[in-house]
Amino acid sequence: MVKSNDLILRTMTVLIAFILFGFAVYLLLAGHNAPGGGFIGGLMTAAAILLMYMAYGTTTANKILPINYRILITVGLIIAVGTGVGSFIFGQPFMSQTFDYYHFPLFGELELATALIFDLGVYLTVIGVTMTIVLTISNDRE
Amino acid sequence: MISNLTILPVLIPLIAGIIATLFHKKLTLVRIFSQVSTIISTIVASYVFYYVIQNGTLVLESGDWMAPYGIVLVGDLLSVTLVLTTNIVALAAVFYAPYSLSDEQESFYFYTFYFLLISGVSGAFITGDLFNLFVFFEVLLMASYALIILGGGKVQLRESIKYVLINLFSSMLFVTTIAFLYSVVGTVNMAQIGQRVSEVNQSGILTTIAFLLFFVFGTKAALFPLYYWLPRPYIAPNPVISALFGALLTKVGIYSIFRVFTIIFVHETAITHQFFIWIAAFTLIFGVIGALSTNNIKLIVAYNIIPAVGFMIAGIGIYNETALSGAVYYLVNDMIIKAALFLLVGAIAYLAGTSDLRKMKGLIHHYPMLGWLLFISAFVLAGVPPFSGFIGKLLILQGAIEANEIIITIIGLLVSLLILFSVMRIFIQGFWGEKDAAIVPNKPLARKLMLPVAFLISFSVFLGIGAEWFYPITEEIGNNLMNPELYIKSVLKE
Image (cartoon, chains in turn orange, brown):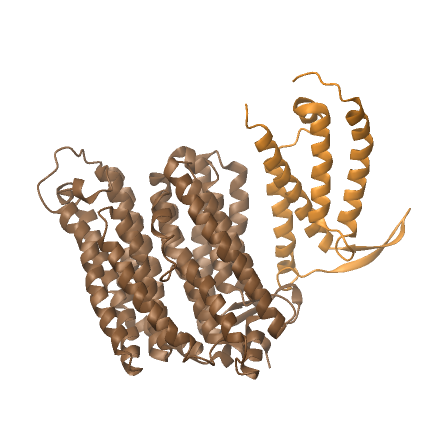
């Protein structure tokens, strides 16, 4: 890799990637009954990871995040389909969802929904797909 | 929750496809896994079929959302019959694949895309929601895009461009048409659309929308004059992939026409269904001319998809119980025999080293079984009694005479003869004649390739000889199709 002079990009990436990750997780958690969701959260996370790839180069980014994105697709899909199948165990129709309220020490009363697990599956799949596509195209010249 | 049975034929291939990605490079493991999964899926599909015969239509309201609001999956007799047939075709394909595909092609996620294709096709057969039908169309198309390009040969790349473009265009039109329909009737649930269209007696713009939908499905099903894209992309990939395409993809288009034009748009049959008969006549004639025009054995089989589709459209165009049950019989028969033929000519082309008919001769000396399998399948395809093609055609033509559609009857009979001739040419030119000394016979491979074909053909023969058992089922399907209120009632539960 050519040594580049992109101090501004690198400095800002630290900040922006952090904000992007945080916002992505917020979108993922809000998704099932407010604007957001696994898909958009996953895209945003992928954007953050991509920014790190652009700023620090493939070798460094691979070292920070040693993830096989194709496996991530599989894991995401298994989780997403699994939530659908999970309703079989409880004798409910396919893809049934449920939710309940729990008390958490720091946040107080919070709603937890099984839709969130499905969203998590979508989230992982979207990250996996996006990163696989982008990295495949970017590695093309080798 | 027994209604969950409905989704299983979609879910099992989907899960199998996902799991197969985990060890896609370990060929022995992924083969055995895929074969076992397909067998399980077939057993489950058989059980669903049996259950529906015993207990009537299965309706799954996914996520426990009530019928017109949520997405429903409807396993009625037609759907489950086609799902079971799909699984039988898939079963033959999965046992053929290891001997036909190169190791590289197999390890490049062949089994995953194969399972996604099966899942998409089963989903399209089962869904009771027009938009969901579009989604499943996309699922199976995505898988087919990947399969057609598998291996990345030059021909495949060229043909896939055509294939992808035409399908993207028709999918775009499909979703636009659904939007039109939604803006008129305010629902995408097929049963409710049917109910509402009948309330306004299919007035105004609804017939136009019907034709747009027909255009979309006609493109997928390769009807005249929209078939031009079909033959060459279908022969570009490996035979096992061609077989899946030829057996399943166009049939999903036909199934959609069956559904939409028996549940929803049934009030202007003088315009719509009469038009289908004309389209069917042209599809029959031009399809069979295509099949006669070429010396490439794979193209002969690919062109033979088109007249077969013509027969089914004739069945829906004639629109009486006899013709419809005949069309369903023919549809099931055609799925199986087209898969068998594609696998068979794939084996012939591989063993003879060429797919050009002029360069082949005397194969019967080396591969007698292969020759006789082709001979039988030509008879099945053309509809010679007692094979299953005969029963379907007989019912369609009987329905045509009942409805006083004499022209289509005559065209149908003549085209059947030409179909027989087009496939017999492979037998006469390829298998008769002097022994070709240049061919070194590979008997063990031939045996392995023939086994799945023999399975499909024996099933097809069974379907013909056992018509006594199968006819009541198709008759009931025909009866259900003629009485859309049965479907609507079972979905909306009113």
